[in-house]
Amino acid sequence: MKKLLFAGVAVAVLCCAPALAADIPVKAPVYKAAAAPIFDWTGPYAGIAAGWGWGHSNQTDPGIPPDGEPADGSYRLRGGLIGGTLGYNWQSGPWVFGLEADYSWADIKGHSDTCGTAPPHPCGTKLQSFGTARARIGNAMGAALPYITGGLAFGDVHGWDSFTPASGSKVYVGWTVGAGIEWQLPSNWSAKLEYLYADLGKHQLFDVVPGVPETVSVNVNIVRLGLNYKFGSVGKSPVVARY
Image (cartoon, rainbow, N blue to C red; front, side, top):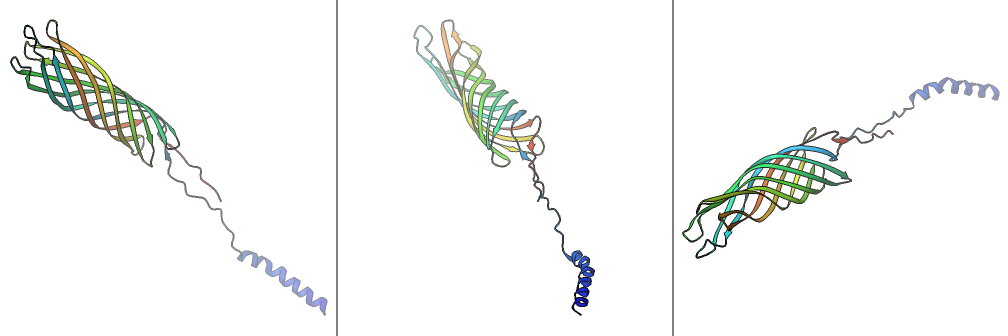
């Protein structure tokens, strides 16, 4: 009797096992959704920038013989500029290090109607072009890259004095510092907003009369918007994990 009961139980187990196995849920492989590519600032870029500049200029000379009384002019400068940009960035973690050069046509000018004293007369200055060669250091924060910058500044300065009259032009070389923020746009594009202060120094620009030099100084503040295109890859695809 015991043998018959044991055999019956064994048959029941063998018959029901496939059905029970079919009811056990099977866990399917889970794949983590792919994240958006991480923007990589490393690489060369080129762009355009335009903006507004304002500043100050002084004109001085030792005076015209025989009285030799010094003649001075002091006035504000203002006007627009537009030009091109070339640069290269290196990214290490969130830090972005770069070199950038730009050159712009400029029309930043000003004058005074009361230069000198014998008699008072007009004189003026115009910054006809402006360029820089700078280093940049930024910290990437998502799609934004705030940065500070500084380096060499240069510009073609034209000055004039109506007393004789006389005028002259010269390329000034000075320094610049500033800050800005650049935003990642779709594809390879980025946009920036930038402020620069540039001191181009003071130089003898022309002679009012032979032997009487006119010294002209120029410093400017510049705010500009730019649009850059980055060459090559714009992102690193993250690894998709499988569980």
